[in-house]
Amino acid sequence: MMRYYVYILKCSDGSYYTGITNNVERRFHEHQKGLVQGCYTHERRPLQLVFAEEFAEAIDAIARERQIKGWTRKKKEALIRGDFDGLVELAKKRRPSTGSG
Image (cartoon, rainbow, N blue to C red; front, side, top):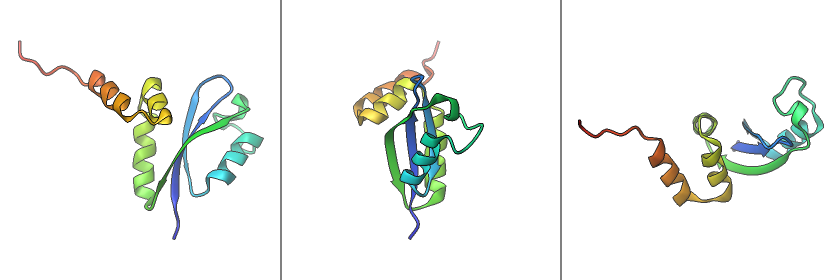
């Protein structure tokens, strides 16, 4: 059965890259060696693999990748740390107020 992964790389400039693959080790190697010209990570090596999450269905991995790509740096760092309480708090701060007045 094919497995899918969403992964986050920390680049040498401190930025994060989020991607999807069916083989994290192979894909990390491709990024680290600069095998894909023009990729965001190409000029930002060396890289660190800081997060990976497994999915049974490609559609779920794609949705998660899209979600993470829309997150702030602080939310990504909370996810990387496994700080799920922090993620909840950061999500609350992003919601627009719905008070009357």
